[in-house]
Amino acid sequence: MAPTHVLRCCQRGLAWIPVIFIALVVCWSYYAYVVELCIFTIPNIGEQIVYLLFFHLSFIMFVWSYWKTIFSQPANPSKEFCLAKVEKERYEKEERPESQQEILWRAATSLPMYTRTGAGAIRYCDRCQVIKPDRCHHCSACDMCVLKMDHHCPWVNNCVGFSNYKYFILFLAYSLVYCLFIAATVLQYFIKFWTLCRRKSAENCPKNELPDTHAKFHVLFLFFVAAMFCISILSLFSYHLWLVGKNRSTIEAFRAPVFRTGSDKNGFSLGFRKNVAQVFGDQKKYWLLPIFTSQGDGLTFLTRLVNTADVEQATVTLQPEPSKSADDVPVSPVSPVSESQNRLLSNDQHANNIGEHQANNTLKPAESETITISMENES
Image (tube, rainbow, N blue to C red; front, side):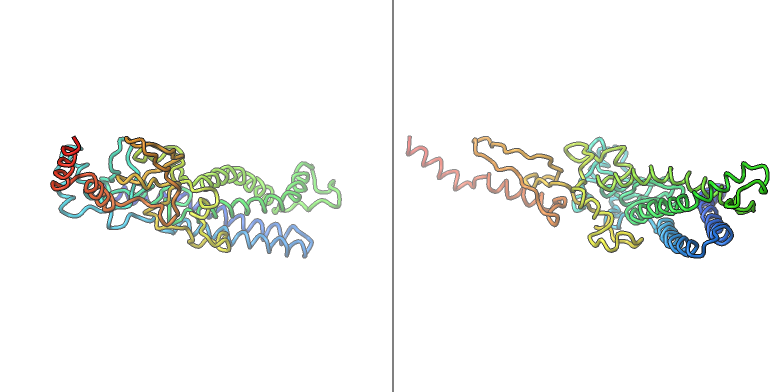
């Protein structure tokens, strides 16, 4: 037991190495840009002020969003998704998967969820002992179930999910702006220092060239680092912007969520504007600030269309077409519902609707006798 605990502590300590590396690179970039470039290299005071102003603005937003991404605790399923003590004991005693699924189905009757496993079973985490809400997955690195899990990012040593996905997007955005600004403003001095390095001696350089000082190494390396990070971040940021526009997580992009009618990669897509609002919120003035404005609670999610005629369980309906009943009576197609109605129909409503349907289609004894007598008289 003790070796396992020590190993776990070592793993948690080693997990901070990528974060420490990024922090050291950022601290060095701050020193190289502010001190070596702006103070020791740039001779123009006005240029120094402008560069320092925009640099600190991007630096503050980058550090702020990075901090929020790292230290925002991943959101977990609420207690209502945990099995009761009696049901948990019964579940653990059962050896047959069918019996275990029956217990889970009974426990999930009042839960707002409509995604299933690939085999159509209730999604249950044996590790956390909770019924997984929609879009929730278990993270092996964090050893917990995370709401709307996107992925586990080693560069922030945290799980990216419902609680910090907006912060992660802003972290990518501001880190890209930070690197682009450094690369663009350092480029002219990089060229001058690179030309100077190719000379045999500083005395042969033209007068407009920069002096051969130790600042050149910081400036040269700063441009290379900024350009390298710029390329890698740009591809990752573009991919996550595409995911936001489609209202998908990284997990859902590789494995489409499974509904009762089958898998549907666009099951949670509400249109571009609403998809963006799901992550950034309704108020655009807060979009660029690393403060939590995402919609919902992470437990239930809107879908594109809900077929209100399906009383067993709400499903995603792509293009409903008119159909006919057994008596050739035309049935109107189901129309899209509003966002306030676009939720999974609870199983309580399912039971009530089934009861009403049976009551309407079952004749009472008196009514049956009356119909029989009337038919005999007619004959």
